[in-house]
Length: 79
Image (tube, rainbow, N blue to C red; front, side, top):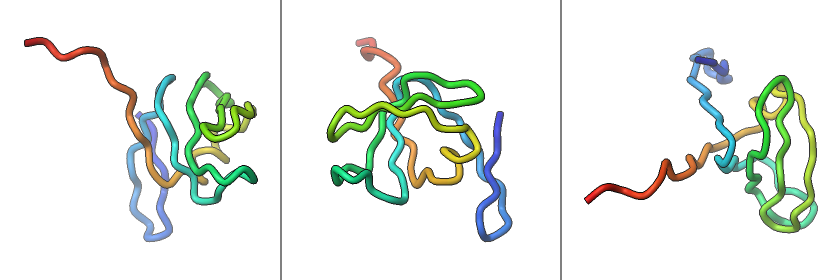
């Protein structure tokens, strides 16, 4: 369980997994705001959903710049 301290002083839980999409505060030069998570650990490997560019970014920097986490589907629903 990890927490990010918001500017208001409150801690919010950050639970990022491979396959999730992160909506960042600032856009990539191609214009896309969303990045797909390919690897988690001390660093994140992210892939831009707009142009496909891949980057490695330190966890602290990624968590600071994240605006929204779009969870990946856990699988097909059972009927």
